[in-house]
Every structure is written in structure tokens, then in C-alpha cells.
Image 1 (cartoon, rainbow, N blue to C red):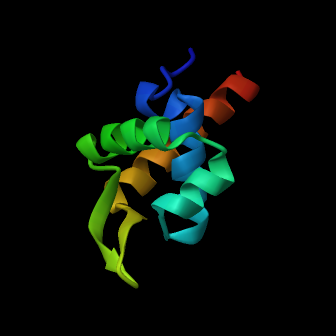
Image 2: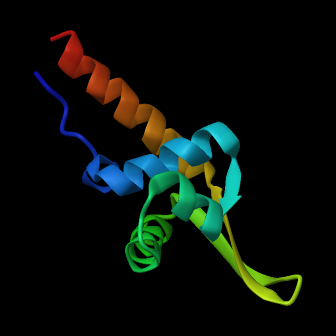
Length: 94
């Protein structure tokens, strides 16, 4: 039987964001925008969805007099990603 895939992580952009953060630990809005190729608006919406699920935390502030948004994966987000990968492997080896 196939496990249901996590709908939060199954969306392409959210999966890209979390995957990147799993490897890097933390990033910022501009870097995520660059590596994902997302628009500012779409990235902002997807970050809010991930933050609502407590998969990431964002911290807004200033860096060199410019607005800066730092993004970091949470332990819950890491566990969700690991479970998602495990569930996905189940599709490869039924």
C-alpha cells in the first residue's frame, strides 16, 4: 500500500525550498528566490504556508540598511522532509 504524500511538501516550490534548507540549514529570501527561480510574490506565499505548518521559521530585520528575511528549517520541518522522502521511496519499491 502506498503512503499518502505530504501535500505541503508535495508542491514543487515548497519541496524545493525545504530541500535546499535541509542541505544548507538556513538561507534568506533573496537566495531562495535565486535558487528556486520563483517570483517574490509566489515565494512569499509558499514561505508563509511552510511557516504556518512550523516547517520553517522566518526572521525579518535589516542588514546593511536593507530589509532582510532569514529563513531556517525547524526540527519539525526536517522530520516532515525525511518522512516525505521515505514515503516517496515506497512508491519506487512497492
